[in-house]
Image (cartoon, rainbow, N blue to C red; front, side, top):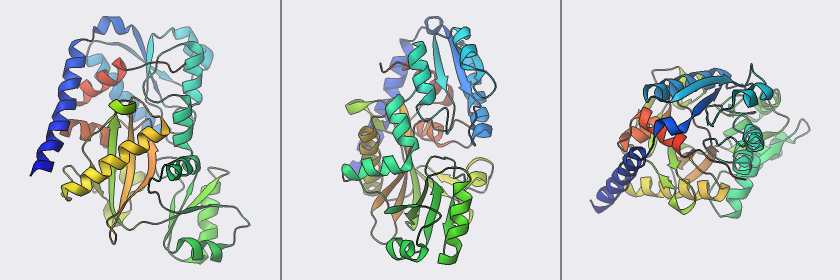
Length: 335
């Protein structure tokens, strides 16, 4: 009972803090705001959806907000806009990987979310997992693949099933779940079309969870955990963004001690990478050991109608438009 009370108190505390912070925000002083959306990555379609939601939310709050599609407009165009701050609603490469953050640092335009280094680390699954392992944070065993890999040795090391995925793509693009060794070369080729670096990862069988985190450093807080129940346990690109058959459970229905363990792990993962502003840790619970394993950290999470950070924020008492305005108010530079 006490766990449940403490959990709710933490969440309502963050919700109250958001309202307190927003009461101090003078919308006119935010100036001209750019919403960076679209971009050039494989997640362009989702980024356009996220950006549209963010733009509408900011306009509803009276912010002088403008869409800026980095996939169709140049860096010179961005500089010419003379934005006072920007909300990054870009997903994947050229937006979530530190490159755009570096441009904005050069232009001295405050932006939402993590800085150059944390963004670059988090987009690279190999770098992320090596860093987490150095902090003794649980993450599934993995190997990097090449066309010359010994597939039988990979299976012997990681077991079956195996997850094969590009090292620097999001939204499950290029991801395969391999159940027999003979399918590994085909899975490698699919992922290699999207990235020169391809990862094979031990498949954790159990509940799929996600835990958003907000803030930075020791002031960072984990939001309510969400359990994802996808058709046939296949949380792919379609089921993430377009399917109404995927169920999102918040509260999760899991034991509160498990939720607390996941939140603590997500917070540690976020801090280890040096993230700030907001992020979302994807976690699997091994159904045999009950151990949570970190899969990846998203530093520019989705803001679509199916997105999970707004869902967790709502569970903590913060509506979508308030969340967007709060994140924008925390925009900054790292240099």
